[in-house]
Image (cartoon, rainbow, N blue to C red; front, top):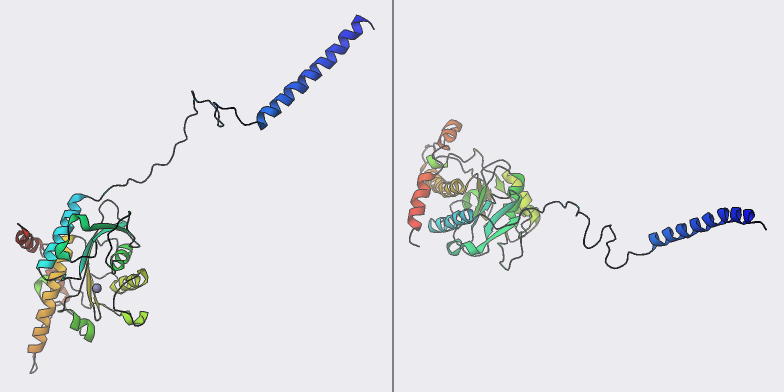
Length: 295
Ligand SMILES: [Zn+2]
């Protein structure tokens, strides 16, 4: 065998052997997990790859203390002025998050403090873990806020002055100048369609039905139970609930007196529309707030 033949054979065999070695080596690298100290995504511990941009979480924080303070004050005012009694409640839409609302735990309004306020979502579940127990009828609030973006505050109450209108179907009609907001026909919620219940709106289905009865109106009566009132602020909803009671009392007195062919003079739609503007119940709120000083 000549040297020339050996040189040619080497030129063919050696590159083939080298190719085979490199090929096997690469395949092995792809199948073997990275050794300790390196990162599977590339780079190593000293030079990690740039992290992927994660979507920012929703800002989570506590409600505005000023909004809570106003809600607490409203609870005390409406207790003092005999609007809420022991069982009524007032809520406000969370100004940071329109899909949440604020409402006290299940205690009498007179006793409510900032520590009793719970933040709820539209299904009336607490927005964060809490040991506080909510009102069984909180679903009224969530379901109305859900379908009425114009509503910022809601009162549910059981004023005895309103009950005769819900029970008889005699229309509650605007006839006093601070209650011009009352619609010509105040809708009445009938809970009997859910079967024989304890009259309480205790789940989202019943809350949804009540919100449907309310429609686009500022108030609805609830037969055998009370009423719900809505507005675009805490002050206005408080004024509406209070003067709705006054209107009901005056209307019953007027109807009792209207005998011998006399008729009760109700507001015309124009009188009701003009009266409803008023001052947003600012002066009433000033009076009621002053009475709360020194509690
Ligand atoms: Zn109730």
